[in-house]
Length: 478
Image 1 (spheres, rainbow, N blue to C red):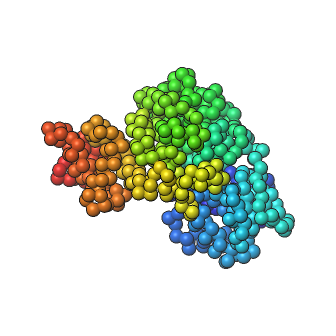
Image 2: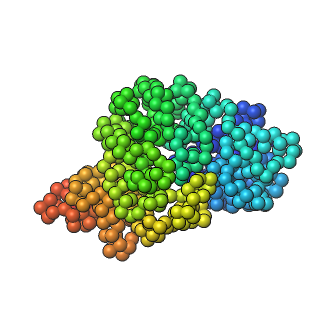
Image 3: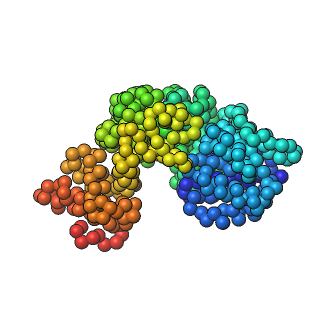
């Protein structure tokens, strides 16, 4: 019996932990012919379909997320047309809620909701024995989770970014997040996590290991034990953790301060500094404590600090979002602006009508307008987000921004001003600009902020940044 596990990733830099988890469970259950296939959203559909058909599997399992479900359904439909005897199974967070959207599809044999390890084994056994499958199979918590390893095989190509799962669930109940639909947290021991992470040392090259735990430091002592272990020279990779900054204590700061720069990345979900907004989405982390912890971590210089904001939450208007931006920008190395997604299964989706929040009906269900943010304002924030990404990506304008931002009324106003400048020049998208053209935009806009007698100094900072990323001759103004 042949089993094909398939998903589509956002890019070649990503890999799927989910299908690897399913393969481990199936292999442990005695299924020997299990194959994982990963494509990207940029791959040609015909080529992906040909690969699936060529596999000639008895069972095809598709892992579905908001970013890939539309493309996957199209592939699954065409696969069933060409290979009608195959069993097609859908799983993943996107199909785990409001499942009638998928059980009604004539090319889908069954939908697995929730955790898939034990459920996929049940499905595989049923297919092998010729038994009928129910339209929906509700996955149960994987009893083998605490003992499972890293799931990546040394014999297979490994991308530069790999994922590791040390715990499942989240202690918090943020209404916009699917983790709030789960109860409790199940975690591997600190000793098990350190043994697992040591396995990545057998993989060559620089690798970032991203721990997908929703709140890595939910257990302070466990988190500190793992961080202490990673201080040993045997651990050479880069490790990315999603943390609740307000849970850090003095001992945690002391441990984190000992890491060499570049070894640890910390992602912190600030989301907003508007207390009314945070109360509405049941996020009670403590804004002041989170900002203070982020500032302290950044000042230490040992950890790369990444902060997240979400636009479109209840009671967040353009002015308060700008205030959140201004509070977050100086206390992190990277600020990411996200946009609310009304995910199936979340409390906020159920309450969207009450709040008057309107979102796209198609995945990824991005907010379109709220009573506090118009469509035009959200579109404007998307533009500012694009500019933030281009200017701050990989420290591309680090010298220039350090020099120029004190001359702007606020951090938010600076990036907003770049957006307005681009529109005045013909409403160009910053994503369509070449790197060379982007330096010209920063120079031309920056001159409106920086006093005339500092233009030469401004030019020197811009030249330093240009020289760091370009080998070609600089533009004439430099």
